[in-house]
Image (cartoon, each protein chain N blue to C red):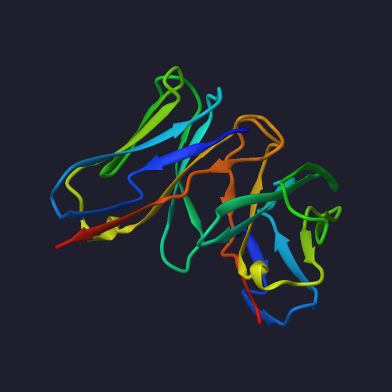
Length: 111
Length: 114
């Protein structure tokens, strides 16, 4: 059974700081997705990582995938308050479930 | 381009009742997946439909069912509601059945069971 673990689950950081969050998964996959969810809202697709070594950047966020280590990172550069949200990683292992999600990381960026 | 549309957005039911939720995917998308989101269990996969056929199913009891119509619109039904069914139900559509298909989520239907 595929398991997806995110850490940390809660992060409070100051504006302007950098931080990296992690997503580990338990079985082989080369397809990983990052989503953002604002309170009371749906999931917004951030990144689609489809191969080992894939790196994608959008604004202050950069995501990477290491399929050998079964690890994805989401790096935050010079955080701003608007980045406050819950971030989910999800893995497609090609099994009976479409995507398996991590529990999400709630990020709070303080002025 | 219209996104994924879910109706109703909010609903309140009592235990023992049943509920039907609707999802209209992005035009041209043939795959529709359903997820349940709760604070305790997070996001859990319910089922996926493609070309009117259920292709994958998560670990939920038979009270949870769904279907897909020829226009790719999908409905899910929960019968004999229990308090634990209170959740945000999210529908997602994608072009592909599996593989590199990115999921696009609707706003969700928030169900409260009293």
